[in-house]
Length: 467
Image (cartoon, rainbow, N blue to C red; front, side, top):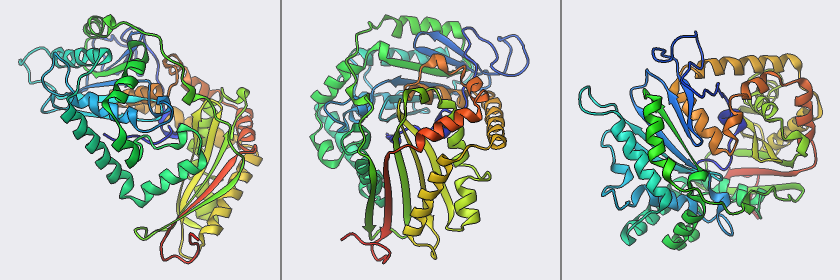
């Protein structure tokens, strides 16, 4: 079960909110009766149940998002949230003899865990015509996960097996990957005293020490009805889903939630650090530069500006990292860049690239830092801003034609901890973003922060070596 990246990138996952509907209605396209419209409709079925109705979808999609992840572990992130994800998909409720992975032989089941959330994902293949109620399989999932919020059972053998599966997953994605190992060390160096600097999956030592009792304690604290959201999509009748949700999740008692100290914005130690890793498995030289900044409260309403800045940094527009570092300076053949909002008040801006053979890692690192200093020190071109806003609007229009893309957008939005009620108005906020808003964000990012330049190099490379 993949654990997602440590942060949600503004440029990718806050991308295309659409109109929130309380009743079935097309979210885009001509005004037609909702009973015959082929356009998807985003419908709030209940307080924490969202339906994306798309009459063209053949499969039924179901995702339960629990708003608890690595940041909510005590006293630090050790991989408990991710381990619990495995146990819930593999353990059994008293009323179910098979595990959730095996509910539908021709379907799909998986899960993922981030710093802020854990999700359980299912896709149900369409039933042949005349073979029964298409809601029956969906009811099975609603019932199963409503019971999962109350309690879970797992045998000692299953718990041990899943702990070994987690360890294998770690080795596959991190232990046996120099890029994965570099990423773990990089995050620890950037945020050494905060859960944000920990790997969601944990380390081999913490994984081997995980217990069912720790997972049950985490479950008891966070797996409650008022801390979970269900998102479903498909060719589904809203009233049937509403009735189903009411008699399953609707009868699960809410409980008060404990404090979340892991989500407090940390103090960051200012300065510029360097991390060098030489690895015999590495054939390419990688340079990564990050600046971590605490931004003032008045900048916190600039999510739309952050999205547009992230989209600019990943574009090929004039003045972008690709334009300056690839096309003009010729220091690399390609570059990744973006802006990440870890928590309200904590942003990072970053660049990562492989230098061309004629360019030293130090030379590329210096150019990256100068580029960001120059970007945050100057204004944002109004013409470029309008072009980015038009691109965003076009993406919204296209995404709103697909129930699957709408569902992905909704799941990512709420998993990042953003209020669902804000999603409908986000395109309007993007459209209203001004050059002044961009200047406020850039000024905040230009402030003093914690900078980290990382080098992942072949062991035989002579540019740099670990002493």
